[in-house]
Length: 213
Image (cartoon, rainbow, N blue to C red; front, side, top):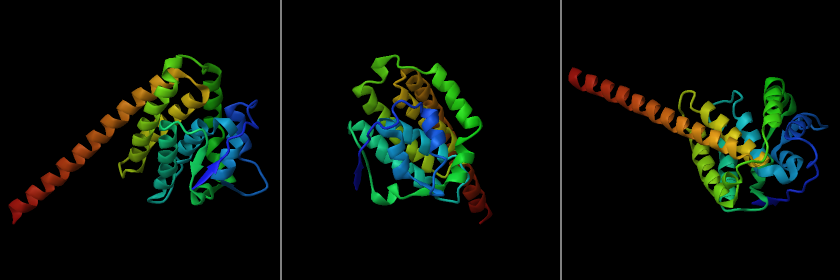
């Protein structure tokens, strides 16, 4: 495992400015280590936000797990109140092409983040304190598990909810935490409904097959 120092070199830049700048560089590949360094002291929330957004890209089967695993680790580290990002070396080397990253993060996504930045601010500190961070970390860990589940469209809802929590952590915005909580409930209900429907269909098919026999 590797502990990455989260120095604040970009503390004066907004979150959207850092996100946009990561799309440009000499290396055509953007790896996770560079993302960690880019966000500096805001790494925990910003990484969860970015990984969640990147998971929304079209990936081959099993590709979502590449993003859910680091989100799980970051969530646990947030829950145990770590001060530095701690990730395996192989995860820090995971990369995407900068072109794909720019397509995923640019345009509508950046405009949305900038709009949210103008509305977001530190508030409701009781929802962004140490105890709240523990709960948020646990909730995001569960959402990351949902993200990896083979549920039709089931990855989009938890990914968006994790992104909201990531923004809340970065901006210390308790209202965003509340919105993330609502999103978590919706994710849970959706997953339960889908799996209940799948089980009912499979049971119906098996019963029909048994009657034929």
